[in-house]
Length: 88
Image 1 (cartoon, rainbow, N blue to C red):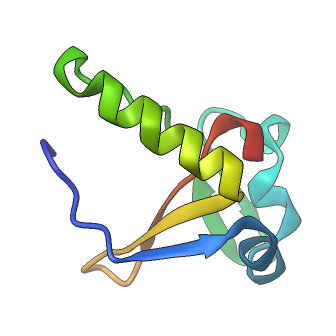
Image 2: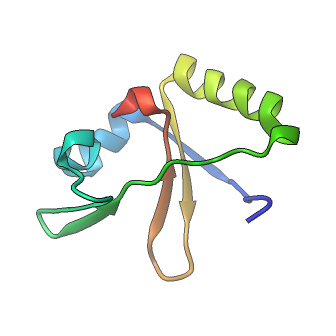
């Protein structure tokens, strides 16, 4: 989507307590999905349009500095979690 309405952030340490450890191991994803302890996780890389690059660079830097993840609750009861690659 061209924009995403974000209302929740969570510290990575808190997020890692709530999700299986396998969700944070990049090597665990064959293809782009992993299932561990009944929790399915998919891994995707986000591409940013050139016009929004400076805003995204600033956002990513803030996420890294503050050790945060962006949380978006989806209509199908799923959750979209945006993290920096350094969190994996």
